[in-house]
Amino acid sequence: MDNSLQITPKAPIHYTVFQPNVLIGANNDLDVSEARLYSEILNINHREEPTRLNYTIPYSSITQLSESDVTKKAAQEVVRITQSLQKRTFFLNKEFMQKNFGEKHPVSINPFPTIRYEAGSFDITLNPYFKGILLRMDLGFTRGDIEVIRGFKHEASHRLYWLIRSVQWKVKGTSLSFEIEEFKAALGCSGLYENRFDNFKKVIINPIQQEFRKKWVEFEYTLDKGGKGGKVKGITLEFKSDFELEKVLKLGYKYKWEESLTNYGLHERDIIQFRHSVTYKAEIKPGHVWDTFYIQSCIQIALKLLKEREKAKGKNKILSFGNYLYTGITEGWWIEEIAAKRPVENTAVNQISIFEQPIEARPLKRISFPLSDLEEIYTAWKTSMKVNVTLESFAKQHGYTIVGNMVEKND
Image (cartoon, rainbow, N blue to C red; front, side):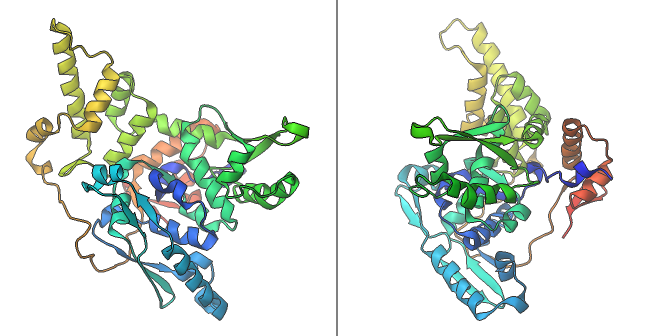
């Protein structure tokens, strides 16, 4: 048996937790139980049921205890978790509200206005604005692995995990470096362990490092001791081949238009954001969603306009076609023209207000995705790791079952 296969972490292309980037910095003070509950909400496919606000989360998934283990002390923990989460507020400024909700005033919200505990579960009602943010994939998001998150026992692990995941694919190389105070602040340790760095390593860094073993965020670290009196002034996290593999995955084109956009000079991170928007049918403007027809049409229109302006004698030249194309796509310059050309069967978009009465809660569907997605990660992984295994073995090891042209995540 190939031992290297056994320790290969599930790749980010299959992660199911979607953390809106606008909220990552707002959740640095959650403890372990709170972070688990919050992550379970983020793990739900909210676009599948855009009007649903009520969800049931098993208590055991938060505490990792079975119902037979739930004691009076555990019941007290439920109260503490719910009270803590209901004290949490997000402030959405005027510009954010105007751009994303069409409202003129800033709003302060509690994302979880109602939390009940009954029959061994949390019954949670989401704030409609919070639900609205979770539906807006175009705002930018970072993906996480729910199985990994559920296993964290150290609250700082959640903080470092999201810090690494939010920048991991952008890094050119295999390391991340931080000033030590910046690093401590990110882990919620500002002002602590002054002149006691060995304690900081023992209590914070080393336990997190162990929890990250055999995960996509696994790291070794080195310290920069160039500070006054030989103090530690910086830390560098060194990643292994998984870090490189994510870049391979990001560069492996999922849609044909991705290669065209690369050739026209668009940045890799922007193309990846377009990929996410198309995959999850994000809205460009009310009534219009991202899809392949939209992007391909934008490319055709932009190229036509480029040729027309090159022939014209006026000053209105397109100096950077990549920037011009990117702005046209994201701002929806040609959206009405494209809508008029769109095949009739694709024009209808169900517009359902998130402020309507939520539908009755029901069990979530089993996670599934096209076989082509698994083949993409398998090919990239095999190339990067230089390991010869079959697609079937790879799927089995990672907990997936191939069913025809689809792949299901095993329970």
